[in-house]
Image (tube, rainbow, N blue to C red; front, side, top):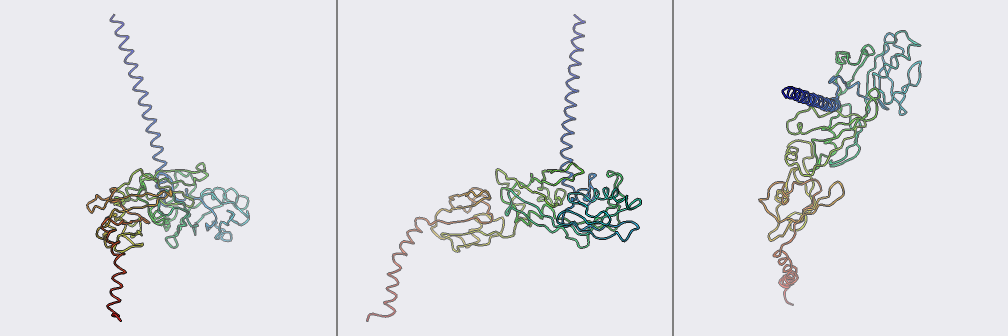
Length: 390
């Protein structure tokens, strides 16, 4: 019996050990998987002219038509010149002629040309300087005021260039591009915040914590596309620039829709210059001033009516109409309440193009009817008094 208990205890011990060991391995796998996902997000989020996380701007930048490159051949000035990537994606280089450069990085071209020029040069030493970057064209979709294609200006600093030399090629993980040229200045490409601003700002339903960015992946990294989910709220609330990523040509930005209005986000945005300072609201009905009126961003329905001169006495309910990006119409019939909570159903925060129609109340309609009936009589009395009875 004692022997049986010992065997049973040993069995339980090994069973517990097996369970704990497997749980530990599972946790390690899950952590590693999550870490890889985080690194992928950091890879795209922090890609900038400054070296970070083993990846640099030069390593990521994919060349295409319109990029102007300066080639410097060490000890061979006759070959050194500026070469433009033509609309078909080719560079016309000395001796080797047309070279296809589209969708390649500077480092890939240098590595390739070192081999090709061995037939003409002894130990070719090549430096490539990107003199002019092509404009950055991006596509923005989702909860943005004006979705579509935008051509962003990539050359915000005059004479700013980025150099990389063939002497810095071995190996990539040991390459310190910050040391390749002491006088090299960083290029300020447009950032995510710039794109949202140029596109007219975001809608009230935008979720800035889950912005999706889709970007071309260099061939050396497998080609195709890479995706990342960017949280821009830390920038909005605290001014943290970490996730305000640089944008590259052909980037696709998708602003997702939130199921409900993120009131704190909306109010924070109204304190910065992301959305336009004024929005246009259309007023009609029993208001003192009708038509399209500019209203300060962040205004609610009650505030907008008050800033437009208020509503007339004895007016009725307020008809609120909004056209959303999907082409649907949101319509509310609201009882006016000056104490209604900000952002509530009866006092919504306004966006560009909202319509506010103040309906006439029972007394207002009666007053209009009496006025319509008595106006001709009053006009007749005035004419009689003016010309007299002849």
